Length: 456
Image (cartoon, rainbow, N blue to C red; front, side, top):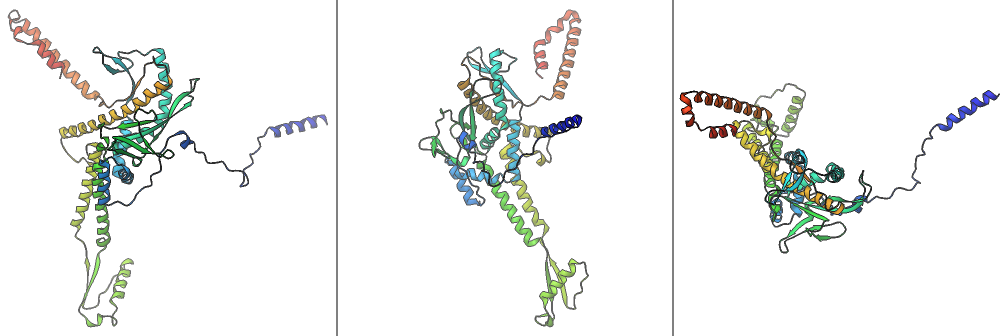
């Protein structure tokens, strides 16, 4: 009896250790209230509904308003244009290409003339332990920033509109590894349609969700305006000004092509007859044509009565090429406006020199956009240090490096040729020094030859 009781108690204890299944909630339970955390932590703008009906007059009006600093319609136009595969591909090529450049942290030091230059960690400035400690904290903030959509939205706005306006709501929060709360900016990118520039006051304004229209004080740390190339009228550098017209041509060509195919894609059957009885109601020609069509669907042969001729009226295939050529031209114009060159798949020929020219133009675009995004990110890091860390700590500089990668094969080939040239020069000098006491050696300008070889 005692053993059986112990056995039963063991079984009971095992059952007690089994996890109970949770009880599901039903409709009688209270529902969780709407969490407005995003709106509570950020200064956001009002929602901009899409506009799907555009014509040449509306597009011209949108670009005219854009040139005057009113981006309400041009911002909506960009949303519509991004539905196009070519526009989307070009914008993503630039955006992710720039943000995918080799990244490094630089340090700012004084040069011999008292100016400030940027240098890598391993060069002129050696960061202290405190510098590296705060840089480590900054890298944690930086990682979260780069994982968000903020950098890509900044890039897309400066590409399409020439500028981007950021709201930055500074809130105390904790970073892993730091026991004190620090100010972290919760950022939001304003839709271009909620931004305008007042040409009378020379000031930017935004339409916010809660606070209405706000004048942007560029010294206010709650805002940041990223301007591309042109500090006075950056919106004039926006791709929307040129791409919209090529986009309009492309979609009108597509619409015309669809209409063309709808009318001429299927051949028209023409029945010719000279028989009087073929006139309805004695002979129903319409039913006769329907019967012919049904017979054709089932693969049945047809037999025409005497005095009837059936012809197919087809469109001239040569006319179709006009639409394709127009689409190809529009796609190339879009790619050139965004990238400075055709997309790689569009290049069908050309010499090596021509390919180098195309690459050089694209590199100019990369350097310009990299400069803009570097300046924007640098401002964020500077303010992050200003509100959080001691003044004597050196502020690092985030840097996307737009320099072309070195071709190691070509570099090694050039080095090999220089080595051979130097060996040849050394042998020549030795031979001349042994001829008649080296009197001919004086005729050889060794210094200039050395410079020429090493600079090749």
